[in-house]
Amino acid sequence: MSITAAMPTAKKRPHRTRTKRVSNLPPIKLSRLLPSHIDLRDPLKAVLVCEDCGTWVPITGMQSKVQKLVPHHTGKAGAAAAIHCRSSNRRIEFDMTIPEWRQALIDAGKDASSRQATTVLSKAFSPQTDRTLRARAERTPAGRVADWTAVLPRVADADKNRRAVPAGDAPTEGPAVPLAPKNQAAHTQRQAELGARRAAWQKQVRDFQTRYTIDREAAAHLVGISARAAARHFDPEQAEAELQWEVGQALAEKKEWAVRFAAELATVTMPLSR
Image (cartoon, rainbow, N blue to C red):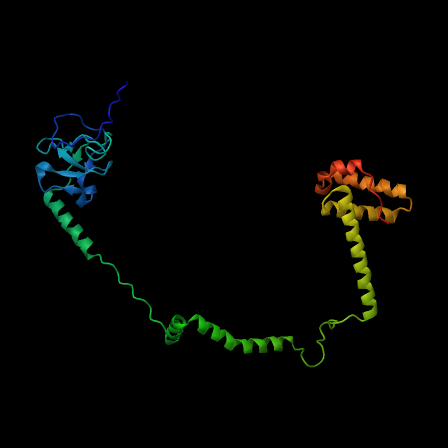
């Protein structure tokens, strides 16, 4: 059975170290840090917030020539992983005195305390808007139905006026629109003929659908091709040849209705529609 070592955790940061190592990174100047990120109340135990890991780190060498950050990990001691911070042993440049730091800290506190949230004052409603909002809040479903019922007579009057034909002659800019056919008997006969043609065409489409087991779109195409071929040729054989040619062209152009039923169209002989 193999034994795996536990993952090391971050160690507690010492206040003093005896190492002579110094980081190659440029020194940290106190004047460039926020006053609240520096603690010089006890000069022998000075701490500041590391620029890289953002944690409080003690400063060692306060009584020597070189002041620097102690070696430290990036996370909380005993909880985070033991990852070495790149700012360990980084030199600290004291370009400000302790009184200057205290004054800067006091000034920062005054600036923060002087900032207050601005009270947002809502704009006053006009009397008409106030009445409208109050009436809308007090409305009930029954009240809305009553309002619509009261409006219906005016809506009916508006519809009646819109349908009314203005008195006087028609405008001179354009001809009058006919409201009825000039010859009612001819119109009725024409409509009956169109209806009969439509019924015959639909019957042919249904016959093609039943005969060749195809959908309505393909049947409609075949009926149209058959009718055109029969109208151009009196000889049934020539009409049949043109019908087959039209279907071949549809297949060559890869039309969907012809491609879907290529097998049926290639094996059957379609009768002409007279």
